[in-house]
Image (cartoon, rainbow, N blue to C red; front, side, top):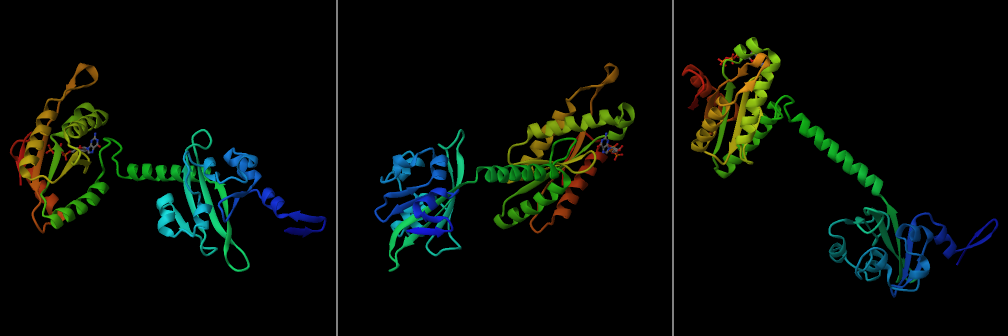
Length: 321
Ligand SMILES: Nc1nc2c(ncn2[C@@H]2O[C@H](COP(=O)(O)OP(=O)(O)OP(=O)(O)O)[C@@H](O)[C@H]2O)c(=O)[nH]1
């Protein structure tokens, strides 16, 4: 078959070979009939080694298996295509019966390459499948850019939930989690507890040592809290010198035990300050276990009331709501 141009005729083989998109053609017996130059460069396998064979898999996989063009010849249905491309394929919007997919090929290049490939049937005048054509495009840069974007979005999301001074979650994150955890506790009838911690006489510490040293005290309290938590518990900086710990799956007994560990742990901290002085501080803690039907504001308010009771009782102590 020839394509006629001003200057003369172009053979089909030349047309395929000149196509800058890597292209493979196989016949109805799965034999490779065309393996164009772009495909040879992309795969590193020259046409002479592969044309006339049924070893097209060799360029892509360590063991024999059909490439997408083979599945087209076999009239494979979605379930069979899925077996080989594990949810990474879709039907082409352009041509009925054609498929496209994106997959990672670890053996390509130094660290592997992502390829977008698409395959369609070649039919004769009677509509019978006489071969299949597959094209391959290297989309590694696009995939890497997408991954970098996803990672940077995740970093920003994480930053928007994090308190800059202490590294704990911030109050915006608290409200999101609290709604979710109350919903979960309600739905599954599970316990949920909350601790509110407030550094005692913090104004005095600031006045005496300065705001920067005050910040270091808050960081020390955050560290004591973070070190004492189990992975299911989360700590938040709720306000200036106020922190909250959320304990899903825990009733007030476990919450009281943790609160006591935090209280005594923080009371034992000694921070060196300028002029050879040491700063020590204490914390008062209110503990509340969620009650069925209670919304997030009421839940926090009850824990807050327990905290103020602890302050009234002389500070450096734990009170249960
Ligand atoms: N260094 C520092 N101080 C803060 C920060 N946020 C709030 N504060 C200070 O924390 C102090 C809180 O003072 P108060 O609410 O009077 O409480 P307190 O002195 O701890 O007294 P009690 O809670 O009754 O023990 C204020 O002086 C605030 O300026 C912060 O991020 N860094």
